[in-house]
Every structure is written in structure tokens, then in C-alpha cells.
Length: 365
Image (cartoon, rainbow, N blue to C red; front, side, top):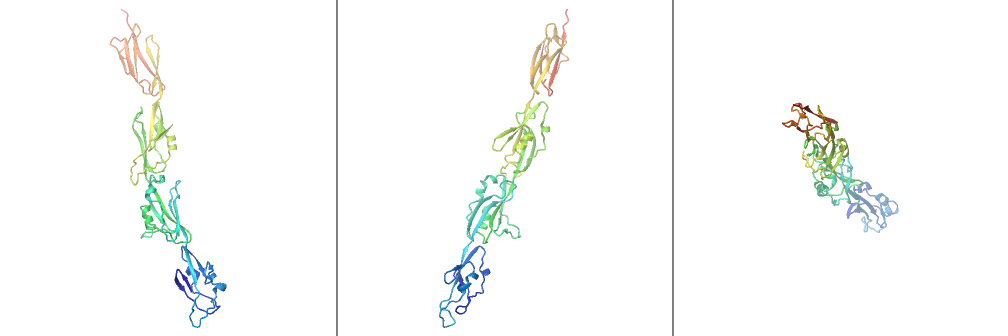
């Protein structure tokens, strides 16, 4: 006879030096997740029952039995040992550097508790989960999936729930049990705005776009749209941590920050901390020529910036006076015509502006 874990599995009878033959075969002894050896009556061990019954170890002994019973039957003992199994917590397909990453791997005997240390709390503390929600599916070590009542892969809302439902090593000869983290990128926004201190369109919102974590940023607004005659501009990126970086134009800024950030917005369709691309304008240097008609006064060169305001006071030379009519916008002539105050924006969005003041010669009485 032979035994497995103290249980008699099969018995056979014969005569002295006859061949021992059991109805049970090695295929019947095979149990997924376990290996076994067969120990013969003389203490030798073999990897299979068939090999244990080959040669002298497979013959009946010579016990003196006067009846049809054996006072000391030979015993072939099958000893099982669990195969070391493996389980993993792994990231599913994400299309980034985290795709397929093994977060934790544990090993243990077939049927033993997994002892995983990774939890939802520890996952949320990892940088790779920021800007994502996730669910969990479980792949058995034989490659099949844990399924729901419809036969589809069962989706767990949390890792803790998935582990609680599948907290033991599988019984296979080869393979890895996997708890697959399936991330879903969160809603994100990016805003293109003009700085609050800009000389052009201060504080205005140019465009707001939306996407998901790490998706490409693409504004409909172009640098051509942002260009304003008489002004230069740059574009600064302001990140959620408050840091910023300035770039020469929008194209350069988007090239440097080409994807949406990973703000934790959960399932909400709003962004608690949208990325900001801030356009800052600076007026160009400009010049203006001041000339005087019909009077012996030299032209004056003035300088400033686009749309800059300046105030000038001029005194008519002896024998001349400023006329009340015909002066440029912003000119104010004194009652006696001897002085003129000009407040204007002479430096328009052209390389050179002009202001011509009109004078007349006094009549001599």
C-alpha cells in the first residue's frame, strides 16, 4: 500500500518477489502547486511512483505470512511540499514610464496568505498616482482573470478590497498572481492669460483649454495672435508649486511644458490648480520729432515707449505767438498765445511720430 499525508490511497497484493503494481498512477498523484517524492519501504526516495516501483524496490518482500494477510505490509509514502508562489502589485498600461512597473513582489507557499504591504494609503502617497484615479483587477497565476457574475474581469474600486477578496497564493506550478492597478488620468486645465500689470490687455483671459493628466497641451492661440505692434512679450509658466519660468514666446513655453500636469482632481470636471501660461507685454522704445511751423524754433527730439505719455511746455520766441487753432491733439495754448502745453501720446505704434505746432508772427504796430 502507499500513503499520502497519513491517508491510505491505494493497496495491492501479491506474492514474495512479485511485482508491486498500484492502480494509482503519477498523474493521479499530481496536485497543482505542490511537488512530491515517493519514499519506498527501505527508505529510498524517488521523484515518481513509477520509478519507485522499478527494480528491487518494486518487488514484494519475503515476510512469513501463513494466511492471506500480511503481518508487515510494505508501505510507499508520498510526501508533498508546497511550491513557492509569487504575487505582485503591478501598474497596468499607462503609456508612460510607470507602465508595467512592479510596485511590490512577495513569495510564499501555495495557499498561504500573501502578506502584501502595499495599501491604498501607500499608493496615494506615491508620485505616480498623482493626477490619476484607479481601479484594480486581479490576474490569477495561471493567466486567467478573477471574474464577476457576468464572466467579465471583476473590477475592484480599491487595492485593499481586491487583496481582501484574493488573499492567498495560487496553486500552480509556474506563474505569478497579479494585482493590476489600472490608472485613469484626471481632468486638467491650462490657462493662457495676460499679466495683471501688462500695458496691453492687463489681466485678460486669452484662452482656457482642458485635457487629462500628461496629455499634450495645444492652444488654438498662436504667437501671431499674441503679437501687438509696438510691444514685445514673453510667456511665463506658473506651476502648481508656485515656481515659474519665462520663455521668449508661447511656442517655446508650450514646447517646454508640453503636457498637462498631475493635479489631484479625482473624478471632478474642474481643476483645483490649473497650469498658467502668463503673457507679459513690454512697450517698445519710441521717438517723436517736435517741430514748429512758421517760426524760428529748432525741432526737438523726444523719446519714450509705445503709448507713453509726456508733457511738454513751449514758449513762443520773441515776435511770435501760438495760434489757438491748428494745433495737434492735446495742445493747450495760453490766452496770450505766448506758451503752449502739450500732453499727448506721441509715440504711437510706428517707428517715429511727429507733432507740429503752429505759430504766427506778431504784427508790429
